[in-house]
Structure formats: C-alpha cells, structure tokens
Image (cartoon, rainbow over all chains, first blue to last red; front, top):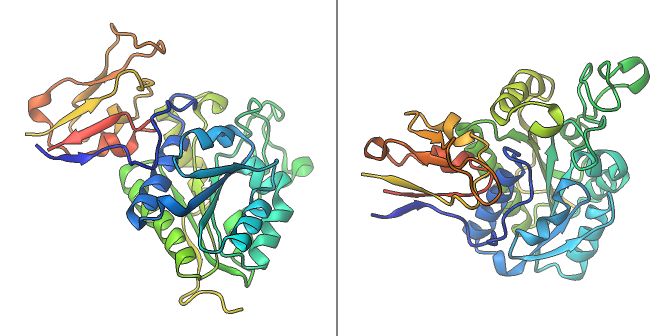
Length: 250
Length: 68
C-alpha cells in the first residue's frame, strides 16, 4: 500500500483551534502544499493577521511574523525588501484586509510589491463573535445587523478582487472557493501560481478564498457550504480578475 | 484495496468528509467521543473504499491519511 494523501510537512502537528467545519484549515493545507511542492519551505516567511487566523504561526512550520491589525502587507513589504531572496506571504481575513487594512492593501498593490496575499473572505467578523464585516452580503443577518445588512445605512460589500484588478501593480487577482473537491483543486492551483509568480518576480498576487464561518452564520458545516454556494458565489463571482503574463513592468 | 486512516484525536466531527465521500462510506460515530468531546468520523465499509481522497481533500483539520 502506498500513501496517496497525507499531511504536508509544512503544517505542524499542533491541532488547529478553528471551529468544526471552518474552511481555514483547508486553506492552511493548500498554502502548505504549495510551499512544499515549490520546495521553498526553508525560505518562506508568513505574516499572520489579526482575526481567527491570528495563531496560524503555530500551524505553519516556516518562519512566521504576527503583524498588528491590518498591517500584514506593510510588514510583508518590509520583509520582502530587506530579504528579497525569501518567499513572503500574508494570510489575512476580511476584517483585517478589507476593513482596517484597506490602505495597506491598496498601497501594497499599487506599489506592486512582490508578495503573495492569501485573503479569506467569510463575510463576517469571526473571532469577535459575528459582527457585520465590510464583506457581509446585503440583507445578511449578523450580530450587529439583526434585521439584515441595510444598504441604505451600511452600504454595499467590498469586492476586493474587482477593486484591486484595476491597479497597475497587481500581477494576479483571482477569486476561488473551497466548497467542494473540484473548487479545492482549483484553489490549490491558484495558490501555487501566486507563489510561483513571486518566485519569478512577477509582482503582487492576491488569491481571495470564499470561506465559511459555520459558528457565526449559525449553520452546520455542510449547511454553511450550501449557504456559500447559494449566496456568496452569486455575489462574488469566482474567476481570474487579472493575470499579467510576464509580470508587472516597473 | 484502499483505506483511510482518521486521526480520531484531531477530528472535530464536522462531517465535511461524510458529505464529500462519493460512495457515502463515512459516518460520524455517535457512540464514541474523542478527548475534545467530538464524535469522530470513521470509514464504515472499508472494503468499498476506492482511495479517491475526496474526504481528505475536504478535511479542514488534515486528520485523514489515504492509502491505496
């Protein structure tokens, strides 16, 4: 018998603290697999955000830095400029990247920093208990919008891939999800490509992963995947929003 | 002949593998509790497993190893 699927070596043996059915774990594994396949685990440095993924430094066996809230891409910029030979990635949620860290995100992208950004979009603030996030859908019930998100007062969700794809510094902007095996495989290829871009010096690559938050959505893990398919994918269409062949010219 | 090995200490009983298995061979053991207090997933009909790794692909805790 041959082992056809096992835990990648870039993931540590620490059990993850995420809630049952949270897709953070799947994305952690995809990042670990990409680093392992590209053979860069020895020179990868990850930047963890604030949010549920704040403790992801315990789960990756590469070097990790914990950035202040929203500042992961500013920290990653410094790391990449000081040590251009290293592979730098950030792992951020929607509360971190699309709310408090919007300025850092937009400006890291306009500068075309040669980093890889993994963005988890679950349409809610997970760690703090399910408040409305910038990415919450119109009408979505959260702790702070008990009657559903009212677009008259709270406005509309931020579509990060569409927003960043208009910037000249971005080499790759792609939205994927992990709701079934097919989409996990697409996400795996996208994440690997984002790291490959950095190794080839092509510039800023962002992969937005539509994720679930079963606990704060108040659904079972399988119901949450269904909710994602029925509500999030129509609002946040999957696909490649920008892919510059040959990378960004500076 | 293929099989899956579930790390029952790590499994959180979320059921995504149960949902993902195309042959519906996996179930959560309602009469077993792991140290975290969850009902772990188990392969109920080992002889029918084809080793497609769909369960392991969807497992958020990387608790499943697949052998073929």
